Length: 267
Image (cartoon, rainbow, N blue to C red; front, side):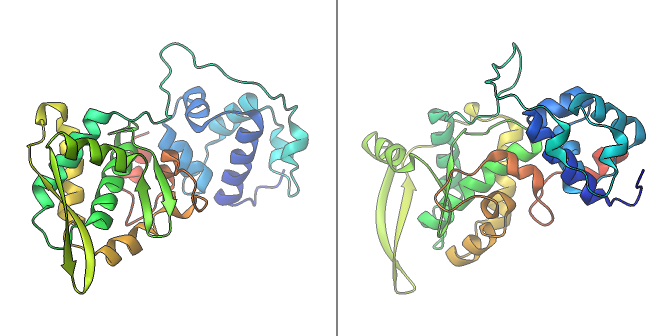
């Protein structure tokens, strides 16, 4: 048995085997009785795997420990792959985002209440504040805040269906859209005409949004766009493609908002 494998190599092999077996991170973590972020850290090579965990993995994923630890481990040869559609079991949390329009409107209004008066907060900054609020909340609580889907575009992540929602809010008298000149460039801005319904926001949701506002709402459009381009969910997505929320678990400092070190030590 070769014991010289690095944590990263072990993590890569586990990732490959999990995908070949057709398991999501959530499913494998549940069967291992560890949290999904802990499994994400194992797959990234940031957390070691104990002997008992490795033995359990060999049973779940169907591999020989001797083969797994060998220098040239053919993951694809160790599994008999069957393509199947897995139906979600009762009570299983589904991570596919589903847009909550009312929640999205209230988050948008809340951000604008706090930031609309700042001269830098045009569409570009607003989109990024929404993105970080959504993805930071998902990383922390493994639940969707607004359920908005974001697409990777050249200037950073942009929420889908936003134009339609903004137009509905303008027609309903909730928002006003106007143009301003900002350092010689035309900027599209939004002014809230109604207040957010704070009863629609949980304390944990409001706290995450407030942190994002405090950290980034004074940044220029170019600064917040450049920052979003270095965030793992954006980096790991294809141009024009939808950004997978699960990629938030692969973040590293300074983007990660969850202390995985404390979680590992608590085990």
